[in-house]
Each structure stands twice: as structure tokens, then as C-alpha cells.
Length: 630
Figure 1: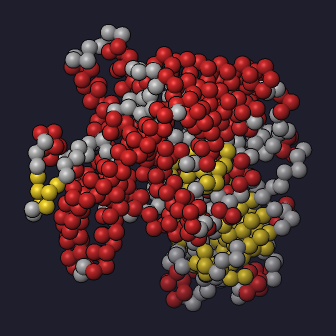
Figure 2: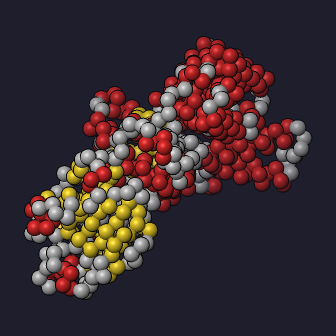
Figure 3: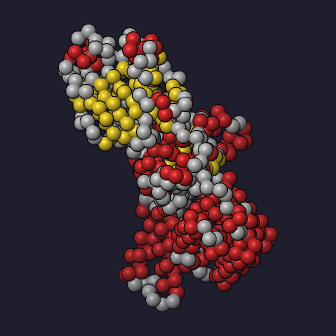
């Protein structure tokens, strides 16, 4: 990646419409998942051509920017940007967003996808890690390296099985974040569901009542649906109580009532109903794969890459985790596992065939991610889907591998994205069929892609992903050059021709705009250098890394204050970063001294550009775009 993560994060946020267009952002294994206020404001074409971005996907109310394995590093830089809301939106935000853009069944599906994604995405990494450890332990115990009764095995198995045993506690936290409930109350409710005394009562077959009402005891360890529905109910109850309880006692009483109401409700109604629903879903999927294994396995796996692109695979994954929790094993969704090897095989075929250095690097990295970690988005969006034929081979041989998996009865005992390190989770019934399916899935697309699925004639001409330091290449292209200048001051925006100083209002100092500050500080509007800092600290000149020069002048005639009420935090010649505070000033004292605080921001290097587009906002905040140069 030619850009550092901070630069890439800044450019991504800028091209999804800026911080003012971002409601929230989360990330999964390979992509940033933005919830935007208005997706039409995002510059999708530019994002897709950025070096460091593999693909952009708009689906289910989310604007997804596929990064690859570096997504965690990029995400950390994104959430450092002022105004970005890290984490999941609450349920109301998602529903509102979905309702404003989509209606009826489509809107409901969008909300459901967003909800499932928000709940399961944060724990996928630890689920996959636990599955990988469990798979390795199964292999080691099977070949006699570790005894299942040894202390070493038992401790390592506990580390791999803990998240499954106490899954309701993990889901309580993520569900609360999703629905806007108090996370610690949700965790307390989940703790009550897996409380050892009541778990033991279930195991012993005891009969319990709650104020005379019979309780249907269920083992809630490893369950999925009960705590999610309980947390959703809790979120609604909390909102209601916060409205009706006096503010003086609200914070004390609403946690008490939440626990006292939701825990019994979970044991009496939510648990039994969702347990029946979960068992029904598990039974339906099990029946489908048992009644017609070959056609069901083929069709599901043939369309699975399309299902992933549509984002609706999350629903299947939730069902799979639920089935594993109920029966300890899952067949239907597990049959899609070898498709990871199909993506890896097709990508390796491109890697071996191409002579293009950049594509070789991309396909090589994508192959390693798929084969070792089961992360296939870089392979799918960066290679196979891009050149189409390899993607078709993935679908065809994925379907064949799915039919083999289903016919052999193969399945997984733990959730983990399939890679060569997680084969152990498939050991047991149908393992031979699983091995055959993986070999077919890998070598089929590899051979077909290499022989007649790809050649370098399919490569696109060089695009704007060319490195910034390749100056000659850039100069010889017709790519449009643009530059955003973010607001250095927040406050009320006024046209430059309306300010009281004629030198600025008549354009003698340059083109631009003026702001009446609401906060007494100036921040850097871009990365660059402080060219000029007046000794009186009332004005400064900046130059961006791309060559734009601007002048910021706080008030008029404020030079007469001789620096009084101004405090400079930087020195002339310093390198500055976007958002860095440069000068602080006392608005009230300057006005009391009889000076205007109208602050012009003008471009002094306008001759290098054709047009200057000014913000239409009447009031602007830090990190919003003030001007755009072309």
C-alpha cells in the first residue's frame, strides 16, 4: 500500500461524503462498514480507483469499503478523525435509515441484515480464533499427540470453548450496543441466564416455579436467540422508564427495574419461545440437507458467492451458530466452506499466469489470505470477480464441492472460516468427502483459470491508483485534480463580499469565504506547512502538501492588539496536520476591545486552479469541507 493508513483513512472519509455524512462506522475482517446519512454524496468511482481500496459495496443500508487484511489499521485511523462515531448505530438509527430509503419487505430485510451484522461482526474474530484452536486440538488428539484427559488439552480446550459456552454474555454486549441498551445491564441479564445454579437445575431435571408460575428450564449456555430478544426488549423498556422516571432517581431505579423485569421475562416467555424457534430453524436446515443433499448442497454453494456479495450470508451464519449450539454440529452452511479454497485456487491461477507486477502482488497476497486465514474478500473483489471468468469457475466448482459435502454428510463442529488451519473442525462424519470437496474446489478453478480463464489482455489501463510520487505518469494523464480545504474555524458562514474590510470584500487578497467564529481557535484545514505567522498572531499563511496556499485573517484591524488575546501553538515553518490546533484567541475580549471578528479564509494561489466551489452551509463545524478547488 503506497499511502500510509492515516492518509488512506482521511481520503476514504472525504469520499464517503465527509464526517458530516457518516452516522457510524464499524469493520469486519476485510471491510469498513459505514452507515451514511446520504449514500448519493459518496464518490464511489473515486473510492474504487484509490490505491488501498479493493472494492465498494452498497448493500443492506451499509456503504462497505473493502480494504483487505489491513482493515483494522485503517479503521483505527478512521475513528481518530474528529466527528466519526466509532461502533454500531443503535436500532432506531438503522430503522430510520432503512425506512427513509427503502420500503416494505426490502426495508425490513435491510434492517434485519444491519442488525445481524452489527451483533455478530464484533465477535467474528474471536469466534474464528476459537474455532481454529479447537480444530487444531481435534487433530492433535486424533493423531495421539495430546490426550483429551491431559491438563494441557483441557486448558487449551477451555480457551477454545469459552466463547461458545458463554456466548450469551458476548452477544448481550454487542446486542446492547446495537439496540442502544445499557451494556452492563445486558451482560448481567445474560449472566443470570447462564448462572451455574439454574444450569445445574436444568441438568438435574428439577421443576421450578416463579411466584407459582411454572418455569420451562432450558440450558442457555451457547444459545443465540434468547439473549438477543431479551436485550431488544430491555432497550425498549429502558427508553420507556427513562421517560417516566423522575430524573433525580432515574439512574438508580431503571437498572433495578430492567433486571427485575427482563430476567423473569426471559425465563418465563422469551427463552421458551426463542428455544422453540431456534430448534425449528435447526430442524428445517437439517431436514433440507438430509432430504435432498446433492441438489441443496450444489445450489447453495453455487450461489454462495452471490449471497456474500448481497450481504445476506449473515442470516445463514446466525442460523449456523445457533444449530452448532443446539446439536454440536452443523452441515448446511458448513458445506460452503470449500468455496474459500475455490477462491484461493482461482486467485493462484491468476498469480501464476499474469506477468503484471502489481496484479501479481495483489493476487499473491489475496491467495495467502484465503488459504491460510479463510479471508476471501481480497481474492473475490480484487481478483476473481474483477476478471469474471475466474469467478464463474469459483461458482461452478464451489457448487460441485457443496454437492460432495452434502452427500457425504460432512459438517463442522465449531464456527471458523475454512482454511488449511481449520480442517480439524470438520473431522468426524464425512471427513473423507470433505477432503475430496476441498481438493475439487481448489484445483478445479486453479487449472481452469490458468488454462483459459485469464490472460494479461484482460488488464485495464493504468488508473488513478498510480502512486502519487510517479509525477511523470500523473502529468501525462487527464485525471481531474481536486483539492478540499476543510474549515479552519467553526461558526457562521458569510460571503466574502459582505465583510466590512474592502481589501477582502473586493477580492484584492484572493478568492474565498468568511466565517464569524463561534469558538476561539484555528485548526489546520489540511496537511501542510505554516508558511507565515504574523508576529501579532492574528493572521497566518498555510501551504498544503498539494501546493494550495491560503490566508486566514482573524478579525479586522486586530493587528492593533499586538498579539493580545491571541496564543500561537505553532511556529512559522512548522509542518502541520489536518485538524491540528494552530492559534487560540479570546472572542469576547477581542469584541470588547471594539474589533470585528469576521475571519476571511482566502486562496492566494488561485491562478493554479480553474474553479473554486464554496460551501453552501450557513453554519459550519470543524472537519467539514469549506472550499473545493479544481
